Length: 205
Image (cartoon, rainbow, N blue to C red; front, side):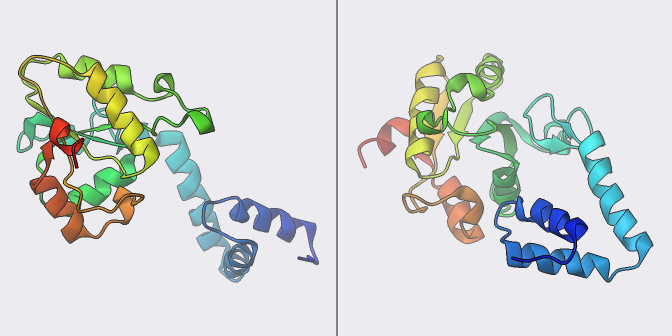
């Protein structure tokens, strides 16, 4: 793509580096911003800078938060006996939209993927293990994508989380293999949570 301005080209390249944004879409976004008044563009930029400088990650579950402890972990209305293990904050949001789960979460910040150079030490697995030592925790629910990486991560976690009286379950296979949690429709995802099965049972399916 030929550009009449180096400044324009640089801006398009930055937008194009975002996931799912091709060069044509990036150009359209940049041109849209150019047509906005200076105050609107400045507000847009300052919002992103403020986000990056001030966003926090919950010290309890690693979910994105404005405070050190997120609203979910701080809520007395949640069931603090349950921990739902997810890949990232997008999955927390997807599950919350189903209104079918009222426990806590644990965000791994990724999945085990040797081909991508991601090992157990790159995730928040040890933090999860320490949380399960709390005698109040009665069940761990694996809500990870039905992919090779998701299944590998679940298998590893199940080996790490052996504790007396700790129930370990996984989503019912309403989500097809290869499907990602964040893209599942709310009805399917909600049913997969409410009809979850013990992890050992899922291995035979």
